[in-house]
Length: 460
Image (tube, rainbow, N blue to C red; front, side):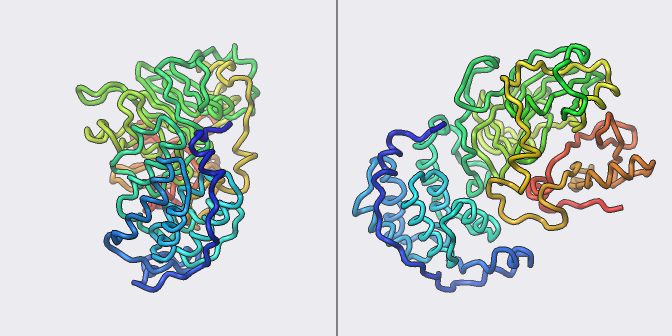
């Protein structure tokens, strides 16, 4: 499917710019002293980075090359000259704008030329193959600062490509450098339009459910995400969640928003009720955007953006109210184990899968993240499954699932501060000393460690 606007199609077909020679940025200040050794080993030393505002000439060049070309749907000698000025600046910060353009370019020649511009700004020659991902990984790993007024430029680029993001790209507690396009449009359908077709990843609102006995379409070894609230149990089959990626549901008398990020191997359950006075229930939707290969979700009512992994509102009215959603535990297990342990469970009905049966976990993502994530903490493989939880003291801790499962199966206790792990229906959950749910979930190591960079890693 294509979401390129007619304006972009006209621009991309007209891009003919002069070849840009690779130039290494002149040293300004040492940048690699704070980076871990493994980053330098994998990505090399970062370029020197200037500080302060852009010169008036450079500001005008950025506007001409990266803003006016979109607004005017044209590319000509003025843009070519402006791009030459950008390259001559040797300012690595401007490579973030090149990265944003590379994400959307569909012409081989212009892609190659933009890649050469990134090479010039970052002082490292990049291959033209998958250059967007490689360039962006370097920018993330090196933690290159954004140029001044970066969001203003990025907003023009993104909102001219995919309609519906105008209310998404606003100031807030979000690192806009790390936001990229996930390849799909925003799901901005009205609430409870589960059956309404869309050119998006369609959330399921108030999904239909059946009893376990009625769910004959599920095999015992099919993966499900199990949730319990106030003694009520429900299974969310991975087959459905890979199609929907977001469910707004009610279970045990509580409202829930349940995002599933196929890229992070992470299903989470957030309570979306019992919020401060005057705050309506957030209706969670998929924006079509990513941060470090993790889906960016937003509230349909206020267009407040949430950090999907942390449940914290980072823009909009809900961020202004300081909304951070409480989590319920999600147990990743097999259908056979879940229904044996909880025969009273309900389960989403097969029709919600829309006739599709994906298995990204063992297919598309098998060789590592397919979107840029920058550097990854090397203590575990990127796609190692972990059980993650934040302790009462605020310390994030990850438990390697395979090791924890073996230890618990052998009768060992696993504790960390106030957290105790226990087996439940073939999966693992975290509870406190009194057995109360602490809101744990399973995820890939790369995702947990990037959204919790100070995380502890449990070891036996």
